[in-house]
Image (cartoon, rainbow, N blue to C red; front, top):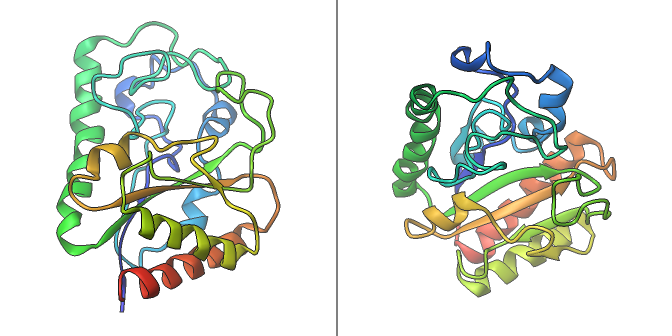
Length: 230
């Protein structure tokens, strides 16, 4: 029986859509460093969850975890990566931006909304740099191995506390709550459809990638059993 979860993995992609290849100034290594490296493998729960939603498009090109009207430096169509590297050789024309939104961003969010009917809980899944990158609020600071976020209200508090305990048990580790991340646009915007949380695992090698996956799956399975009744 599948877990009644939407698994969202918005930052695992590494591709540059053809619409902006001539504009993009990033080399593959820079795209990778600005992505959620390892997320595709850690959160590969297609067979275990009610819905698994991801994208091949790199976060540096179209960020699914930003509001559509966020056109800032670190917005939906970024000008710089989190390592302060210019994304484009020249500004992307607005008509090309609209194509990116229509072909990649809006379908992602439609799939999230449509999947809500078949699930009880949403989990937005990420990996984070072990040390805060230059453009982050916690620049140069060591990050925890695991951070769970609910933006102070995107799911019932008792469910959130149970989820924290499940991750503590599965990873045998302390869990940071709403720090360094409070929860992004996906969980905030879709929590009117069903409860959502954000999961961040450090890219530090505190466990091998396969072990991280198994422990995430274990924690989510336990949470579904004790909080969602299957």
